[in-house]
Image (tube, rainbow, N blue to C red; front, side, top):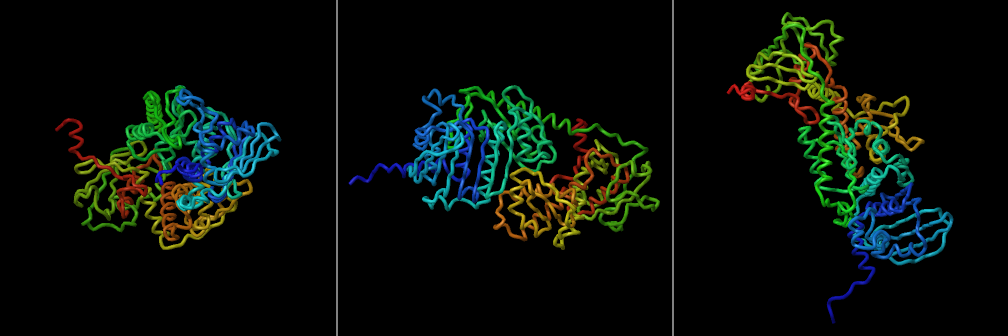
Length: 604
């Protein structure tokens, strides 16, 4: 008897389903693509159990005739292409005729479709076979209901993640297509709760920005920088400061894709122009002539291959222009320190008598400095230091660059550069102190010490603070609401479907609460509340809201400081346990040795 056999059709379909349908998000992707290809102006998505239990996609597209509805579930049945030549220039999102057959082989499927209002057709399939087929009254369009995904394939179902993880991946898919098609309305409901309501808008730069705001929040969208358009490239990139999360969306001819060449261009441009590895959000839309891009190189059509490097070159040029413009806008004119001779600062070093580190800054005649911990603006201080000498308390930690204590003696305040950097002259080097990063470190350690031993208690707000963080982050906060309540945050769903903050931890300023929750949601989005240890969550929470509170409370860049304020800043910085970086890891102090300066000026 022959050992080699031809497989049964059902088994063939189930094997093929594994290439196309990996998880609920794969089903959502294929059904949304079909809806868009059908000319839908509105798409509603309902999920249960993160899509593991049920997925319903409803559209108002052109629908299918009865004979087409049944044929659509056959393998390699498609209305999109007829020849290889059409495959090379295909513009539709779907074209292989594999998706519906794969879904029907892996789940129980109900399809209700109509090309004319009220005159529809209804099918029920299980295991790839039609069990029910009958006429049905239905609105124009198609509704696909997929239940019990992989129920007959237990080996596949056990590899699905938790409901919250699968939901997050479904939302990522929906967000991608909603961004690609701002002219289409998208609504998402999970377990009866609305997660996204994105009315249709225009398919231009303004409309795309509005769609970004619908998904990620108005505050996020308002900080984006528009890329220069040339008919081929358009999009938005985040600003150089305040990068908190990596959102990278690449679209080619309305198709959400992953492309290493485009990502490489983006990351390379950020490194070259901004000199950083902290990558901002990117929304890049490319329009490529038919036949210039191959979309048939990946089972899920997630990757593309360009036949010419010109689209990538244009994208690179637009990105570099936008990044450079953002950097120029962030710069400010140089502020020259005036008001008399610069004061001389004297450090006694680690071995000196040393004043108490909590003592106020004192002038050489013993008068206490009026510069407080708030680093007030120069307009609030009566007079400049204008030549006065101030003795600084001895630094408590290792001196700059690990040099001997004696090397810190004789530091002299030179002035202020661009309202951002405090300049200090040392015996053999120039020191630059980032005023914002330095003040962040000071406030971070002060706040950490104040709350480390306490469990934050909640302080109720007079009225709820509406959280407009976007559907994805609001969903994360809803998942973690019980854990967050243990840490002092109280969240409540509001009547309009949004999320309201009704209580905040007592040490946290109300004005900072929104940013703290945004950072927490971005950090926790990949976690399951049931798997996150309470102690670990509290630790993450404390670190996040202390860092955020410090960042928001710290003196900003481009904010003038007078001499007393700069002195107090430097004094408090070197009284910190970790003075050389801010809570986010950025350096607070840079040193440029005399030898390096002489080398740069070719004096050596």
